[in-house]
Length: 485
Image (cartoon, rainbow, N blue to C red; front, top):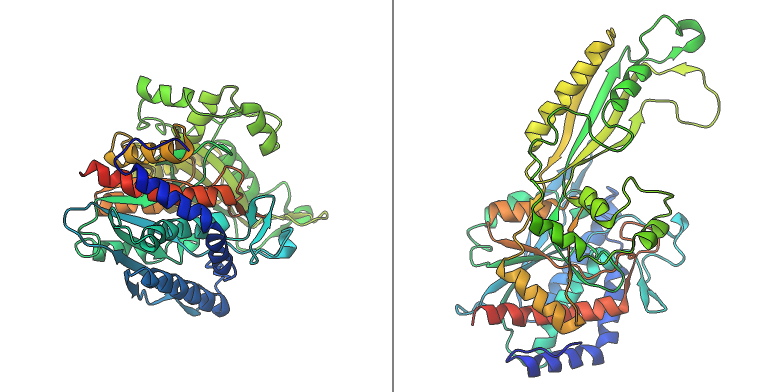
């Protein structure tokens, strides 16, 4: 830890000491939260009850700190199979409302991906288990650990009877893993109420790029997800009876999917790169400073060779250039064995990760025109339909924003180092929703290490990341307050 050069130095030391002394309590609280199977992905009444229990526990924790807490009822969700399930409430909490202080709003989620020990977990996923400083459990890093770290930071000031340096608002949902059902409508509704006094928004729902060096995230890619359906009839054929006299849907589909990229991963859809933001010298320099051991990255990914050989090229193609991935084919024969079938109808699935300044509706037109052209060249009598089933825009922040500077200083105070300035190749729709609706600066301040394995078996957060992350949030409060002094 480097010594903070601010008038708050004494208070920082005091808060950090408190956190070191109380870290076992913080871990115990995380254990209680992880024990709740708050899985939002499987639409089962029992799991919905668990989600309601999780939200109630978090609301209680915030009230204990003196926050005023509203549980916003979002009604229920109609599922394709006809069943109706209640949507867990969203927590809107607020602590402090002093006019002279900046207001920082934290977003987090308390739902998790499904997990069972039979999936290959070494321990019960819902029993937080510590091994060699690693805290294993579903939701430990995504996102229960970071949400609790923010609460730990608030509680340290409270316990020490110190004034909170900033006004704090918190929005916590329970449906993030299922697409944040009804959240955007709530944000729109609360724009001029709950969010009206907010100056800064903080999201901590990603990971660092390394195991020991912290990071700040200033961009995420969007995603346009497509299905392309080729139909001859709604029944399969026998290849002995019909093989050789049909335009086979599978052959059409394989040709369509094969036309999307070349062997170097370059997307072959005309015009797709037209709106990609040009690379500036300033941005180029950011990649050079990033701490990434390519050899270690390749080995830990268990990949023989990447498409690119340099750190800079790899990071750019993960973050600032679009990519196209083919995900699968519905309706094709994929069981073991030798079934001589010609599928009568098949659906290919692929998606494009979008980057600034690509637009989902432009991309949708480009994809449709390209596939229609390729299909027309085949003179097939089958029917082809292309649909964009998901269109999420990319998000980018200005790294010169006040709160990015505050976060950099807080990282320097806690970790004694400059952060990696990184983007995330995946999609976090809430960042773009906040930026567009509330029009305030959004910061992504991750706490977890690159190997935390969110969504995977044996998900974990290191005790060190969890406790130092709690300190980081406390230091961040003080740095933001200082900007406004």
